[in-house]
Length: 208
Image 1: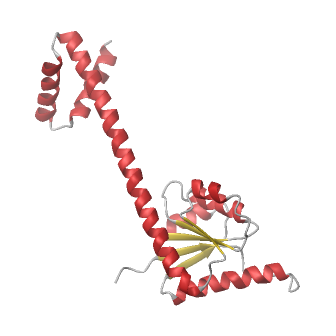
Image 2: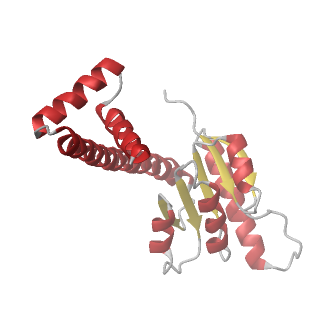
Image 3: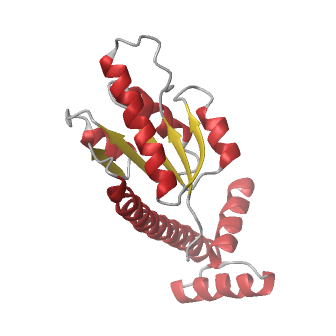
């Protein structure tokens, strides 16, 4: 059995100051239903936090596996706080709302929301929604890692090519000889080829 997900819910206070405010009462009841559904599905609900300027610090302390944004009229503001709070350490974000205005869904997805669920609080829907969100997040993270690796490899190749060009120019070597010299230096010093190439370029900059 997989380890229980640690979940933080970002939502407004459940307390309703005006007992005649039907909208606030409905939203509070919906939020309660979401939290009960999470517990009934066996998830570890570690905290419910407001979307404020302290959110980043609180998330850093709690280290949740997944963040649920439970918001309606203030969804855009809540989402902005969550995105800013998770910028340094990305986490899957699932947004539950009864707001049927989906005009800002593309912006939400672009900002990092893994799943955007409208009127999806039936208890039997919660587990599949969160499992799909986790799988999608893992897939996106893998793609980002591959892209970063490709960019790093391209950057290293450019550094090596520049160092080869410098050796060819200053020592009268052909391309293969310059490459062999870089490779021997890397092996002798126990460094990566790109690291040796960068050191040569740095030394050339210093010496002019």
